[in-house]
Length: 401
Ligand code: F6P
Image 1 (cartoon, rainbow, N blue to C red):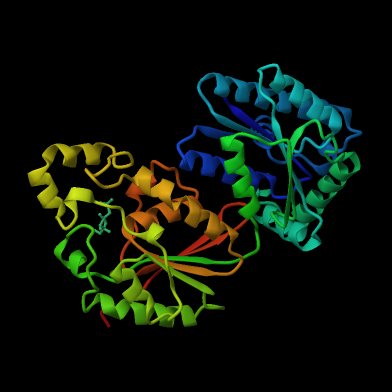
Image 2: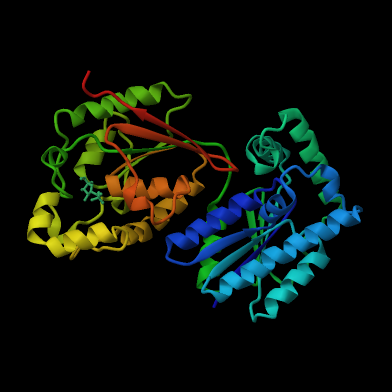
């Protein structure tokens, strides 16, 4: 049974951020999920430079243009569900009772009870940060003068505030997310997919923090080109931990938490950084099963068929008695929720396939791209999530000096 989520809330309340995360979460666990953002329809059809007055509830021309966009987006959403979509998110402000009534009735005609996800933000600091980021990064203000953009956007929000009617109807299914995760209130929400979505909503926040991802230092197996196993670091790889620690000293704050896998090479790498690392089995490298300890050349020679099948579909190929990338993604679910929940900086020292998957989640890469991402050794990837996208920096550390 398809699930339709309907976002509700004033502009700059983190709706789009939340919608995108839900889609990611669902795709990650193998479901077809898609956001239908009414703002994108407006930008495509009318251009991105509509003045604040376009959003004035007393401007009847603006009102009917906005309604036409809302209808077009909903029609596409239905078309997508008909073609096999499973989780659709209708991303618009939907702030009036009248609008929600129409949206709900249209969705119920298809036998689906929508779940409203209302994003309420009373924390003026969060709103101010959102406005600033929106001003800088929203497609509505590309190339606009920042001061003008902020004042125009603030006026747009004021128009919406006049019309806003928060959800009060307890006959509807809804989740209210207050101050991006500070409080989550749930009403009449059931079913396995919806439960997963609520778990994500409970862990999301937009408190600024940086996530550091790195592979372990070069291992004895890396030197030999062998897969998997539990080797120690090579002499060169042993220089990476101290280099990593020195690098972290140059950052504004050192990460509060350091996580490793249970494998020697990540624990040895983290030791110079902290004596208090947490080891997660969930962060262990992809299990190469019967190919553990082999080189790629061994796999090609001894199991040519498997070698080609993996090349053709690296995401789904499962090593005999081992794992596929999809398996790794599934098992990383709890780590990702925990990373989302953390409000302080975290350093994750893990492995090639595992860092690819974690990076893909936070850098908004598709599930299909994940197995092919380039994650070099001795490189720290620093990711700072933002309301619109992320700030990503890569630091290649010198272990040969
Ligand atoms: O070669 C190092 C390594 O971490 C192996 O243990 C693992 O099997 C491999 O990388 C994963 O990369 P790929 O999926 O590209 O084979």
